[in-house]
Length: 253
Ligand code: PEP
Image 1 (cartoon, helix red, strand yellow):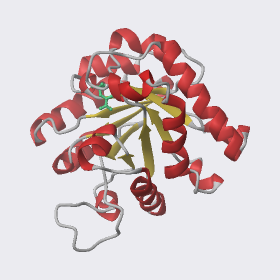
Image 2 (cartoon, protein in one colour; image 1 turned 90 degrees about the vertical axis):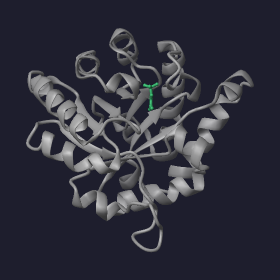
Image 3 (tube, protein in one colour; image 1 turned 135 degrees about the horizontal axis):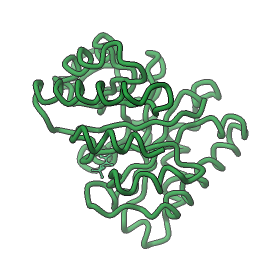
Image 4 (spheres, rainbow, N blue to C red; image 1 turned 45 degrees about the vertical axis):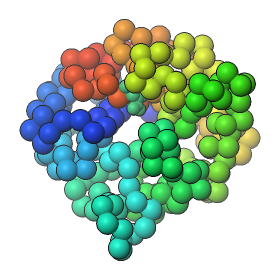
């Protein structure tokens, strides 16, 4: 079912104590929104997952995500974390394919397909990120790139599996740069993605998938972005590190 969602990607920021304090403040602010608010997903760094799990325990509409996961179930992969480990600390979601993982860690669409498979198999929800670089946009390759990122990492799934995904369109040129895609630019890509999904899996499924926008979302631009017909919320980096700002984004629907 299509849901309104705000997800905070804390990246490699905050200690255990900072993470717990931020999550507790957000849980308090989120409780004032009642049933009408969006789902809120928090993605702290691995060592702080437990701190956040404790802080949001019992908070309605709040969920815990990892920022990454290894594709194998277990084994000799020094420094990596498996899906069952995430599950054991109450993680329900995992961000897959963030542009920083693609750019700095060389993650390909093929590898991301494997990660999505592992996450789904364990019953967790992947938040699959995709988006074009500035060079690709300027070279008018945006739609081609996005189609490959979706097709190669997710179109092998069956309808049931695909319908459990959350998608996040994150133009790389807008991440952490302060340059937000205009609501029209973002809507154009979201509508394109929904049409691709409809062509592959049918309209009913496409209408039910939540597609988030990410890239310099802030309290003062969220409302306009979230009012677009195919934008179901935001994946937020920098602005999710401050409780008042992130809570204001969550109130922007
Ligand atoms: C992100 O990291 O997913 C992101 C969108 O970052 P920012 O909001 O800081 O641009």
